[in-house]
Image (cartoon, rainbow, N blue to C red):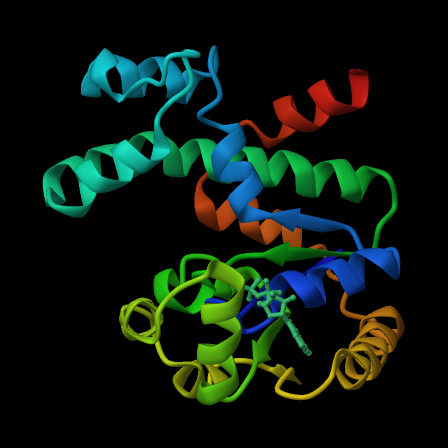
Length: 229
Ligand code: ADP
């Protein structure tokens, strides 16, 4: 099995391309969905977050107020580290579990949809392919303003907080150029999909390397659990 990382910049079209790949039958693991899942009420991370940050960070329905938590860690480096130390191992574990789920079902590759792939670089060593969804800065700005109903100033502020797409471009193996129409993008996604389908990279079992290098013991326990469940 091999792993493909899909990334972009805010409003460059990553979700659009991810949906196109999904429609073509690609298994996708969305890092944002996983990050939300691991802090759901009754999860291990949830209990630890409430214990360390207090009940003030909860919404009335008992869920974690992610916006409030986000504001809290934005201004406090130590709290940010604490939160990451709680959530990152859980996110890794959940992603690994989902990769194994596809692995035992015979999929040859999985696409990991990760917004900050090149910023954190934690995952890149385990990926056989990295795909950047690119669009030119002017298009990115106008799509962002339109999608999130932002003023130009607000949108520029959000864009300036990110690694520029041109910088990410040099780090990716594949670039989907999404400055044009959806049809043009779709044609490129079809070509990318064909490349992934034809790839023989699934022969070495990369997932073993992921587990061994990440030091995530318990692979056998996990695999057994998944196989028996
Ligand atoms: P991301 O997931 O990278 O933040 P999205 O896929 O949500 O970006 O795309 C940002 C916005 O641009 C959305 O409103 C989307 O519908 C629109 N969009 C994406 N690709 C195109 C395209 N090729 N042509 C026109 N609009 C697009």
